[in-house]
Length: 123
Image 1: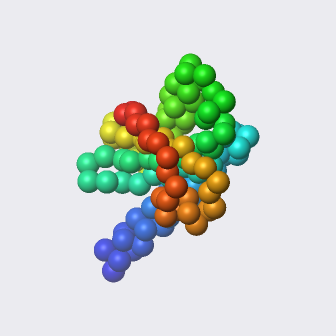
Image 2: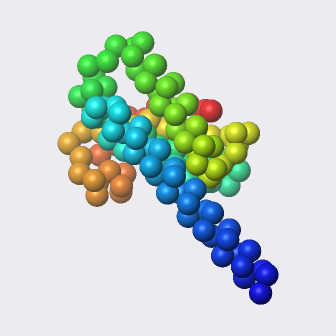
């Protein structure tokens, strides 16, 4: 009985962490004023993998310093979202890929089609 309760508690905690993470990355997208189309992350083997999808028009209008700044700041925000949601730990290695997307629907975004270029950073 105790094992079943512990398992249920762990499932609830995982669900709450995922919901908090979702809320945090939704906030990242909303605060970008349309620059960031979508943010996602998940656990892979021994690390986290995050994906940030940036609107092509916004990206093309940025100079190199702005591109570097957005990848650094959003990369940090995504790592913080993983940790602050209690979904991951501060010491967990996180790899974040940045993709530029063009004329994309939500279903295409989720399936990964129409990705033009990728940029990666490690946190």
